[in-house]
Image 1 (spheres, rainbow, N blue to C red):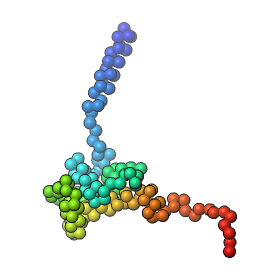
Image 2 (image 1 turned 180 degrees about the horizontal axis):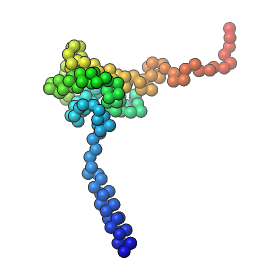
Image 3 (image 1 turned 90 degrees about the vertical axis):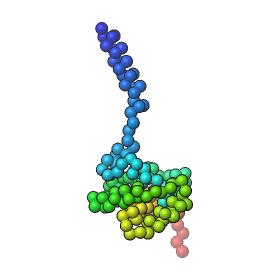
Image 4 (image 1 turned 90 degrees about the horizontal axis):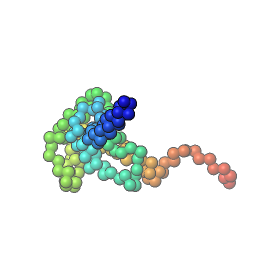
Length: 161
């Protein structure tokens, strides 16, 4: 009798594991406090990649830009700023932006960033966090900024004139 129960449990476990690949998870589930749909999340990431093209090869960071950008939006924005940003994203969603033509898209985004409306405010926020992600990469800080992560290095036996 115990053998039969063991075989049934193994069959149930195997069947459950067989169904696991069909379960889909929302990659934006960790950012549930942000009032965006999956399409709006993807639009924010597309705009970020147009504003600051990704350079993972030469300036690698511990987390990808999507995670950084959405974490900054969720953690640093006040409720009022988040509502304004969400309105701006909805307004940007209504625009027909052709992401297949990067030159035209960059020209459109550059002109919108200069505007004072909610679209410009949303794009400036995306630009600000995208640049912050790029400028906090260790390779950027060491090679371009000349930053030392341990300041005040001790150099013994230095000749005094």
